[in-house]
Length: 356
Ligand SMILES: *[C@@H]1O[C@H](CO)[C@@H](O)[C@H](O)[C@H]1NC(C)=O
Image (cartoon, rainbow, N blue to C red; front, side, top):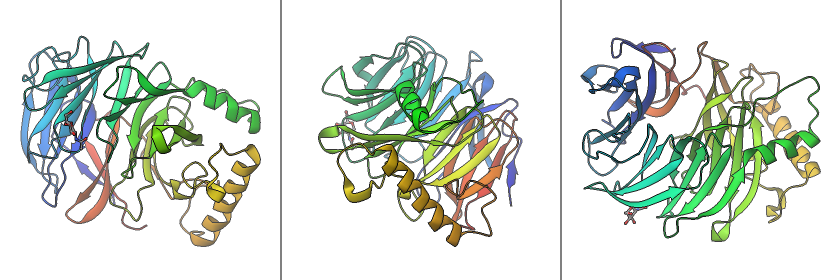
């Protein structure tokens, strides 16, 4: 049963972050610079409005210092501490595993990496030619960072260099896939990249894009881009994709879109994540089809009763949320596996994932 967390904001909520640990807090940021901190029961523990009325676009808790929160707000970046962290409006923040590096992505397309504490800029990565919408550190690979932008590019960076290790243009992938899958009469938006997430193993990336797809990439040895593909996840732009760290394996992914849907996917059987025969080369179209039909059979037998979707290779759980999804945050709340959804309203909605 869905729960509503209300009263925390007076405008549309743009971002949600959860801190780790059994008593971990949640935070949400909204238009107009509001930030609200919540307990796991949805009690409001604190509210503030940052000066300047710019949107709070990203909230992240430090994994190292309990209760320490970074908020991006206008061009000043992480609250007050680090003036001038970005030249333009900041869209995304990410902390590395030890909480000692903060990545800041801005409207110019630049990604800055700041050392913590202190906030000294140690790297400026300029390669995106449009807004950089999302950044993520790669677990288990210190100094590896992924960025994605409205230039439709996903980039993997090694922080020793100011050049990306590789760049994937999502448009190339989309076109390639269309050669194999006829969709007569369907027009798709360009794959502007909105949200990138890295699975806890560090080698699988998912990127939600405006074409409604979630693009999936696997990184091989030497940080090479080994394989790529996509899941047609939403009937309109996909705004959110987050790997869920607390389910049975690292490849559960929760996605949200402008179609008002929230879906949970098991990418563990996706041909990009689990390539057949562990082939090092890119899967052919035939291999991909084979992979898909296998998945279908498995799912048909396993969850006949509960999959509402007609497409059997589709999500394991599909929620008609009903409003355009701004942000998703997987979280364990009082022992219950949940996803917290922010949309265009002033409330958060919490959906349990427990009946999986
Ligand atoms: C986090 O970033 C700091 C500063 O760049 C670096 O020294 C450290 O190795 C990083 N830790 C991880 C786990 O990535």
